[in-house]
Image (cartoon, rainbow, N blue to C red; front, top):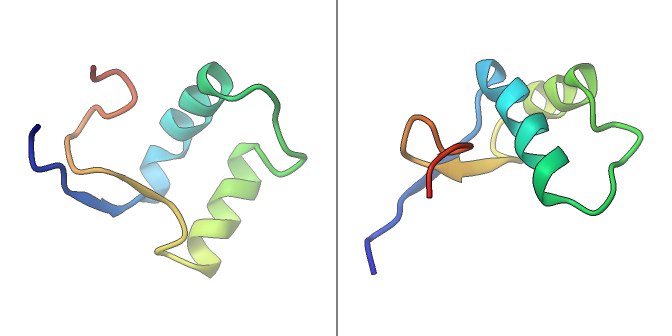
Length: 60
């Protein structure tokens, strides 16, 4: 298995996060929108982690 690295998500990735969550999750939260996720990242920059490759939302 590859050595997968993770990093904190950034504000430009919010649309990709929302797309990924809508495809992967069985439900959504009231704060699962662009403004809510952006507030989370601004309040706690390390709250959301993603793989280190650029297009993680469409990768295998």
